[in-house]
Length: 388
Image 1: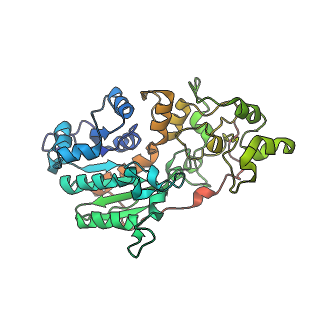
Image 2: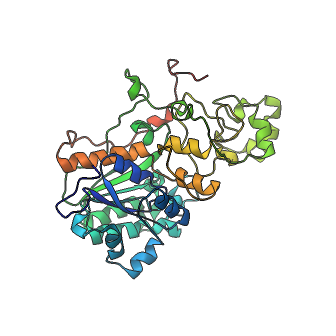
Image 3: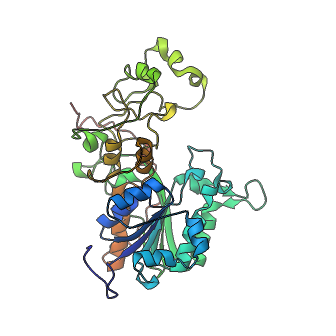
């Protein structure tokens, strides 16, 4: 599809990508047949990664870029596009302010306001479609909290899109249902300028299914054949001391009872499940959600059998990146780029939906998936392949 050209002599289905990061969303959309005309990110190393993989990128703070050029000409010129050419604008405004793993400052955190710049580009460029993705924590975030003006932030965002003339669908989807070997929930908002019958992509993979190709993908399927896992994040001597006592699929609860309190320290009497402490993953299950630092005490992503964390190459496999994709920057930079990425199989499913609607081949216009909590289940099926 990449060589197809439209009547305006631009690549067919051109896309402007904002907050592109390591290009997980972009790669998935291209696999579906769209063309990423230009990417943008503030982070120097993300931009280096994009350019090293032979894609065009603009580096800069989107707020400053739009302040100096609110017409978005800088995006259009770099992409060699006219406004009427743009098929879609896509992106995931930085989401730490809404993450349930963070302090949830929301709009009080400047990172929580960057969705406004995304909306500005939509209003100015008026693409046929847009895709905005974020953490599911945005769904429960309130603005003007504790006042008579308290209201859901998501409602305000959807209202802005409606005022811009877009029909939208939205929901929380889990990447495991689209062939990603990882439980990873994301809020996806999709908009259509022309009020076309868009929908959230239908799941293609399930916990149990008679067709093994349609079952959830496991960590083992993703990384077991990786001959050289490359570099991984370092672990403290204390973590190594106790992790070597934990079997595949276990965590702190697997430690000998007489040393658990010593191993856990102050966390021993704290609340919560503490499932990430001294955690080893299982080859026979999907990975938990990848974090940007896999060696943290409470969110350890330990290799199933080796005395280390998951490596950068293993991270990339889990997210669906091609083996030859180049990541630039330090080890920490690479983990961050991959850990923040949209899983490529999920992005591909979104792109395939857009293509189906655009080409008039969609057969499920009336079916909209509103998210799922199936990710809470764990494998109990003994027929799943064991790795040795």
